[in-house]
Length: 411
Image (cartoon, rainbow, N blue to C red; front, side, top):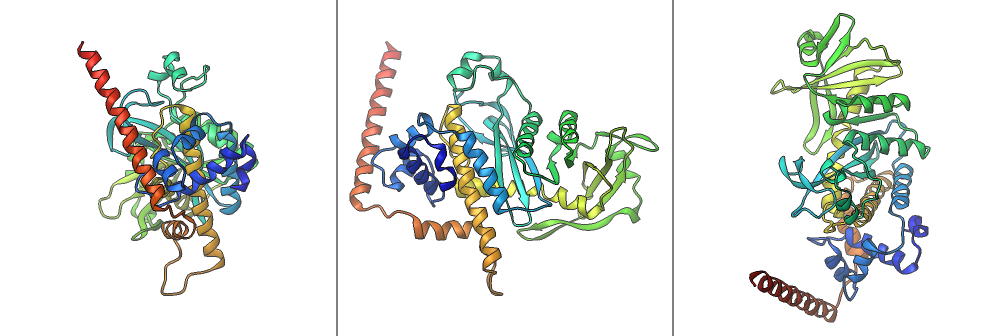
C-alpha cells in the first residue's frame, strides 16, 4: 500500500483504500462496499462508497503502480503479455457498458459488461497489469447516456483489439520490454493489431480462425486446408504448459509463410491428440524460432484464464456492484492490486522457502487463507449487532420507498 500512498489527496481515503484491499483479500463469501465495511470494522458502508465514487484519487495512476509492481516482482526476460476479455453478468440497462452481448463467462449472449485485460505471464507467476472497459456502439451513439454513467464527453467507440493495442502501448511506453504478445481469435483476426505490434517491434503468437488465409511460397491458402497438407513426420508432441492435472500435451507443427512485411512469419498448428481438433496461430518474430519456443508462447494464453479465475475467486474482481465508470475503474484496479499481492507473495515464497518434498508449493489460495487468518480483523458482538440493525433499517427504508412508488403508479 505504500507504493500507491501518494495517489490519494487525503489520508482518510488512503487508509480506507488499505482496508478495502484487505477486504478484497478476505474470505468473505460476497465482496461489496457493505460486506467489506462491516468486515473492516467501519460503522456504515458510506465511507467505502465514497472511496469509489467521490474521493480524490487517480485510479489510472494506481493502475500504473500495479503494473510496475508486477513487473518488478515477477520479472522474466521471456515474459508474455496476454490479452483477453471477460464478462460480468448484469441486470438492467444503467450499468456502464452493459448490453446484450456474448460473454465467455456464461458461454452465450447475456446482458453483461465486458472488459479487456492485459496479463503479464512469466515463469514466476502471472497477474493483470492493465484494464480497459469495452463501451459498445449502443452507448457511444448516446452521449447523454455516457455522461450519466460518468464516461468522458469525447468517448468514441473502440474495438477490443484497439483496446488491447492501447494497453500494450502503455506497457511499452512505461519502459518495460516484453518478448511476446499472445491472444485469442478476436485479436489474431485483427490486422490493425498486427500492425500496431509490428510497428512497436513486438513478436506475437495470435490465434486465428480456421478460415483465415495465409500466404506461402506455393500460394495463398486457408489455414485448415494448409494444415491438412502437413506430413505426419512434421508433427511433434509437446507440452503447452502444466495444468492442474498435469502437462497439456498436443501435437504441433509449424509452417513458414511468405509475407511482404519485415520479420519472420509462421503458421503454428495445434492438434488435439484425442479428438484431432485443430487450432491455428499466426506468428511473427524478427528471426525464425524453434517450434518449442512458439508452443511456449501459445501455451501462455491459458495463464489469462487462471488470472481471471483467481482474480475473481480470491480478490473480488467481478463482484463490483457499481454503475458509473469511475467506480468501476477504482474497484477493478484495487482488485488487481490485491491479486498482484498474492501473485508476488507466492513468487517470493517459492524463491526463498522451497516446499519440502511432502508438500506442494504455496498457492495463491493458501496464501489468502493464511493472510486473512493472521491479518484480518476480529469484530466483536457489539459491532455485529450494530450492522444487523443497520441492514434492517436500510431494508425498511427501501421497502417503504417501493410501496410508495407502487401506490403512485397505481394512481
